[in-house]
Image 1 (cartoon, rainbow, N blue to C red):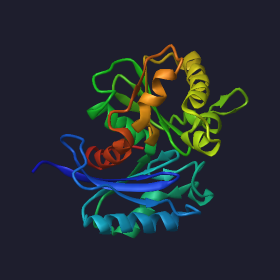
Image 2: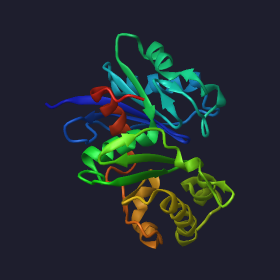
Image 3: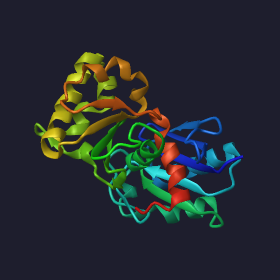
Image 4: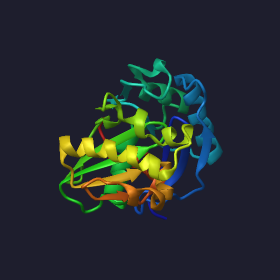
Length: 251
C-alpha cells in the first residue's frame, strides 16, 4: 500500500489538505479546500484544519504549512494572515486542536513546496542554487542549494524599486488589477532580475496556483536564468507538509 501522510497547506485565500503517497509524491485522496477564514486568526485557522482532517477521515500525524517565517513551530511573521500569529506557538495550537496523540509539524509554506519539488518535481537532481517562488496572495520563496532547503528566505518581502516584491508581482496583483499575462510578466521579470543580481541562481521554479497556466506567462519572462514551472503545481505545499512529518524537517 505504500507510506502515506497528510498535509495541509494554509494560504491567504484557501486552506487545502489531502492524503499524500510519500513514496511517489502524488495525492492519494481528493484534495479538500476551504476558503481561508477572514480574518485568518489562529483560532479560525485551527478550526479549519480540524474540519479538513475530519472530512478526510484522517486520524494520523499531520503536517501544516503557514505563510510566514516558522522557527521550531513558532510563527514569526504574518504578512497575509492575522497579526495574532506573530510569535505564536503554532505547533502547540494545532496539537491541542487535533489531539495530542498525533504528531504535528508546522513549516513555512514555500519551504514545504521546495522540499516536494526537490524530491519529486522540477528541482529533483539539480545542483547549484535553485529558487522556488510561489505566486499567490503574496510571493513565497524557497532557497535550495544542492538539494538542501535553507529555510525562511522570504524573498517576497525584498524591496524592489522601492516596494515589496509581492506588492508588485504576486498573482493577487494580476487579479486585483485585471492585468493581462504579458503586463504581469513584465512585473514578475523586474522582480526576478533583482533576485538574479543579488543571488545569481542557476534555476527559478515558478509555483503557486498560477503555475497551472504557466504556458501563458513563463515564456514571456525576460530573466537570464532559466525559469520552469513547478511540476507539482499548487499541490507542492500539501506534499511537502506531509513529508515534513515523515522526515522530521526542522524549522
